[in-house]
Picture 1 (cartoon, one colour):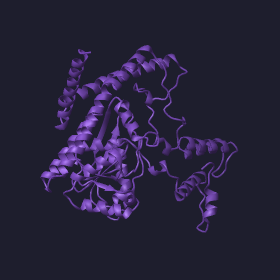
Picture 2 (tube, helix red, strand yellow):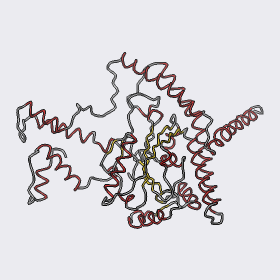
Picture 3 (cartoon, one colour):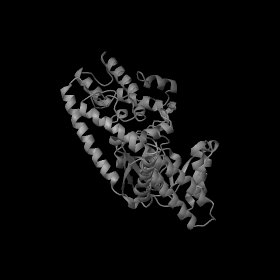
Length: 457
């Protein structure tokens, strides 16, 4: 027993030396020793080898199939398919055959089972396995060597990376609370206090980013958000904040929480003008807009960081931007964020995992590899309303990040579809079936619902 304690102490000293001098110190100064880059390169080689082994296994087992979608569609729009069916059956516009009934029911069931909204709130299924069973529901035994590599990966992720990441996260959050509290207690100073506050925030976020083995590629840094502006970005995970703040400081906007998160919020606001709202204030749209407008009016304050979608989307799409962020005024700095799904699923499914469970999943993933594009600043054009401006910014972010541009509201994750939007979709569906049908102005709402209601919609 006497020989064990000196060995444990030496192991602990080695552990702290690695954490403090090989990880934390370079992170604090924005430097890298290149270890993470080598780790990512080795990981890519292993995943490529695993992909080849899986492909060979699929060739030997033809009955085994990996399908990344719930429903396999033939392709083509409904207009094209209806036109093709009319030509096949020699039908004119507005005429249908009895078999068309089954076609409409089939399309209706497909839409219900595999709609565009629900897909955006479930984890992305990978075409090739990344040695994480959580990211592939179709995983099965392929070969002994692949299983051994998977087992070694579990030991590395849970035995080495997880304790290291927990240590860095605790140090980063502790330093954030202590550092911001100390800076907040200093006398008011326009330059010194602001400089120290930004230094503390930047250092802590860099340590937390290293705690996730984050490799971030920033593009077009000349377009980084400036003070007095508004930074808007697509939202995949709460880690978005760490990724963006790793390259610059922002004023956060959000609701006041209790517990550990509340302690962090209260300490942060002492040294930096973050904008926290009470739950009652969040429901008051005018109060929120007024506070944000006052913040933007002062050009010396940090840019506000806002995620206009209002919820996390699964790294494949950009959903509707709430127009409130674009009614404030000021310059909008769009940012596109795209995670590499090969190294782990960054999407936070808040209806399935709480924050603690999600953070544990991220800390036991391979790494966080992400691309961030800073887009040129955008301003509201003359005569342009907030809704069109929001859509224009959203389209620019989706195009840059290679994401789908969807008009659906992310609030549909927990709320019902508005009746007005449902009627709009019903009329659109009706115009596809009956291209020459036009409702008269005198048609009542009840008649419109009856004429425009498709099966199962």
